[in-house]
Image: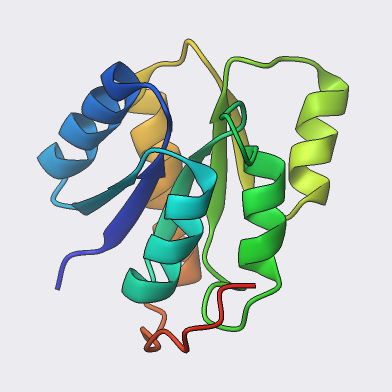
Length: 136
């Protein structure tokens, strides 16, 4: 069974780039274009990893990450924040919200895929739990 990666970004070009690179490595890709959709899809699909943009309208990536971390079905899913924001405070806030890794745009797709592979290898295969309907 291939690993599922939830790509969360409000920019279609970024979604396409990430999706292409993930599929070329054999991953199943699930897409969410905003934070609320990401939380909903994470509950339904229980991804093996989340690539999460920080700057999105409505609900930012920090909030999405915190919500995922506080729900039993997604609490242990690795999260890589992918963002155009740079700086030590942004990185620290991302890690404080529960992210496992942080990469700044623009980035090398090869480097990002290596990080994805590494995180999935170190987290092993997690059992997929059915959604319980409570996404908060």
